[in-house]
Length: 409
Image (tube, rainbow, N blue to C red):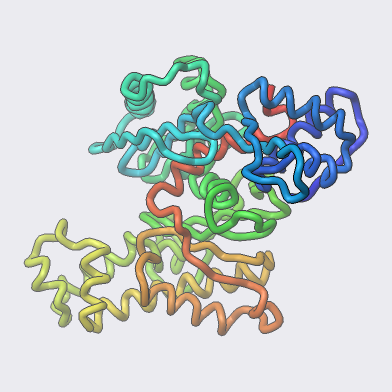
């Protein structure tokens, strides 16, 4: 974490210094007041006063060190009181609404999933979200005064400043006033963000992006998206559309995308495209074990089944996954050459497991098309957050705000 000090009002400086101390305890704790003063160059009385306020607010806990290196009185060590407060996280995906309660260290203490079975209207969707949150609050039995806020990770185009889901492509909904509706309903501070950008924040707090100032997340599910983290911040652009990698062209002669263009990454490398190509091959009578396994039942064809077929040597399944990885690799190499991030984090079911064909093919294309002078400095790795990544991103929206200057208030 970079320590940045600016001149300004007393309250502004106090807020900045308190945020600096809180983050230092989070990253370096257990840590003593003396160590904080040494690192921050703040005077011991200033550190003592600010720490005491954080202890009173129950954000920091004190405990005696297990031993002293110099003898005498053991120093009092400071740590984040992660279980003192809770955050509600909501992930609004294409097929489910997932609501969790989590502590300040990202530990999920309650988890609820509501399936979306039919395309809802805007009012029906909002009602489902509210009902899911009410259910969690009732079942978890947490006192609302200990809830710091409610974060929402929403697929599609999102305006975080207005708290508006501008367009949800899979639900075919526009202009959903999530922030206003949820703040009115629950009287919590509410933050909303695009799901992949929320994932980026989760990775920076709890995952493979910890301690990394510049990285890129690529997420593959029904669609393909990316989130950009630059100089320790999520990059959104003035239009809140940064990271729409799914509609970059990787094959001008490729399949038609739902957006109308040919060869979009999403049309070549999403879970949807994998299943469509596999089903087309089955329907056209091509030789593949998938035809036998599904026996004409399209609903039986899954991503897991395609990977299983490839592991058993099915050439068609292997080819589909290799093409998927190559398309993703070309797009990833382009992003690397433009942005120069130090790390690429891959998220999604298609990247899971050892000896992964998609990951291997992606890495091959990155090595081939990435500028050679970058090859030693950039790592391509898989997320370890699993299926909880997006909803932890919703949680991290609120936690990140609390740890920023002014957030403690």
